[in-house]
Image 1 (tube, rainbow, N blue to C red):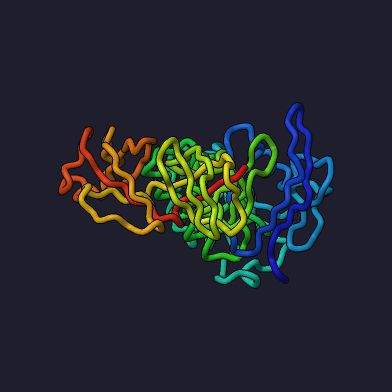
Image 2 (image 1 turned 60 degrees about the vertical axis):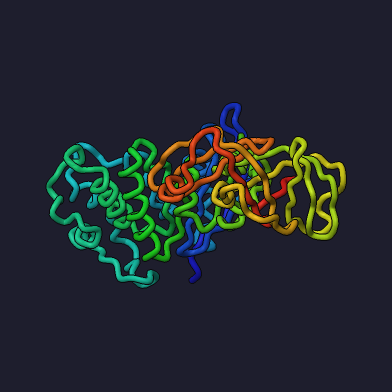
Length: 365
């Protein structure tokens, strides 16, 4: 049987909040990230899928089974919350044992790897067998994550739900645990939904992304598509696009448009017929698509924008250096630290910025 979850036209009212006709689908082995600011409905969506809220309308299907009216304990969903939700009065072994399911077939039969069913085997599989008699308060964040995953696997889940499990962690630990979680999920064919407000989490984990704002879907689709072509300025800002510019279409011929950003020309690759002359638009340009050079290069074709500018600020984030440049409008780009040193990059220095036309994404709403 093909594993996966489908949410169809889900609406929900909780107090003044309303979730508006949410549709999503996640196949076995895929990771969907629900991304959005606080109050956008991320956690409420997860809780509704888990069965803690009854929707006003719509359906939730897990492995083709309609679970919309079922209680949480009958949905076979593994839910990992912030700080991993371990019971403080139980040892590691007891935390896992309390979730163990003995009434379902061996989950290894539908997974790409063989998973043990017994508590000791699950702890050994997650590399925490030596911690069996420890209390949660004595565990590191990484150990807590592994125990939480062992406990979730003990329930033989058809679906993983993660509600911002890294929100309270510092950057170094967060990065480490994210990599461990990704490796773990990739080894299974259990679909996973991960809620976060951090675009780094989304960029690293997601196969698919849903961006929410006040209960409404702003954009949904493959992760690479959303990062490359945000639907609007809200999505662009939220996924971390460094350069969002207001512009006016000055010329539109075929698949190349000339735009005016203040009084400077900028070319963008666009689908034929997608923009019209005189239209006000917004542009999204990722910082890694901005090339910073000394101002002595030859003029390039219209397929590459060339802008003279002056450095306004420099910030080191080893191994990258963030460079802010005034090109008649502000532009942010990056250099590797050795490049920045070789170019003697500092505030006030004249530079040339080049940006490929196909790296300028035009947002028309």
